Length: 106
Image (cartoon, rainbow, N blue to C red; front, side):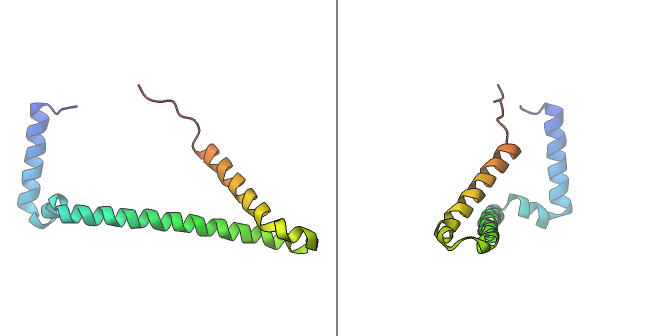
């Protein structure tokens, strides 16, 4: 939605005032290198979150394996796939609870 002429005039006045008061800050906002650095930082943060999520899953699998420590020796070979299946099921259930089906906006 475009701005009305009054709103555009007010926005231009704010931008001009910002450039006059703090040119270094205004340069940071319009600098393409700063935008690229911000994008890179965001990408690294997302990668760290995914990595942490994967490590959490491995920790949960280890947690289930500790509970299976007293299991019969014949069931030990299937313990890791069983623990992995439980983690995947819990994760899928958590995603369904957190992100229900949403209707699309028209």
